[in-house]
Image (cartoon, rainbow, N blue to C red):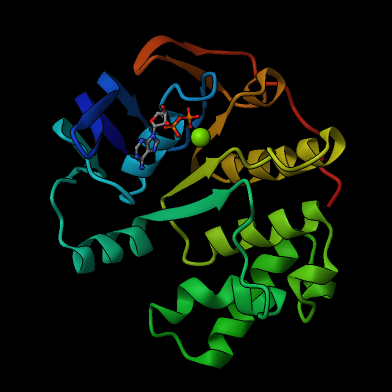
Length: 233
Ligand code: ADP
Ligand code: MG
């Protein structure tokens, strides 16, 4: 599903250049649940943003579902993102003035799906995350865990092949973090490929494979015994 070879990325600011990814080799098969671990500044978000086509890379190659992702124009990149990828962020990134279902339906709007069908599909995804009764509520009326579940429903709305989560539990307490991970495990059980960036050891161990990033290189890449989290939805 994902294949990365000798990938390099530097950030340039003025006359300075910061070499962040220094030759990443990494592939992910369909149905995997992979944690990308590493301390702050190790390049986790940079890697995830490249995988999510939110940012480009300098040299090496990135294939997503067999397609070389390199120097795509913005329209084409947006099409691919819509078709292949769903995103989950630490800070939820919900739109404050839209209801839960409207947030979930947003990716479908860009696919030009009619409002009635958008709402039906959004309600279905909210039901999956246990939040159908909250469909008409605004994000400000929801707890942190509920907001993240809405964000997960939104990430699933367009049925992406791959879910990319950047510190999805970073803003949540430990009990809520486990509930969110239980949901991520459930979605993975249904066959979805998921990558979770985290710096928390116990969150990483709820995945099936842990990739350690240090100073822009992968220092270990191992399959682990998955710790199951208790779903409460
Ligand atoms: P992590 O997610 O592992 O904490 P990041 O990928 O966010 O690490 O950042 C890796 C390094 O790149 C850090 O030193 C960070 O300051 C730097 N960096 C990240 N984004 C940018 C940017 N847009 N411009 C310049 N430097 C950046
Ligand atoms: Mg980060």
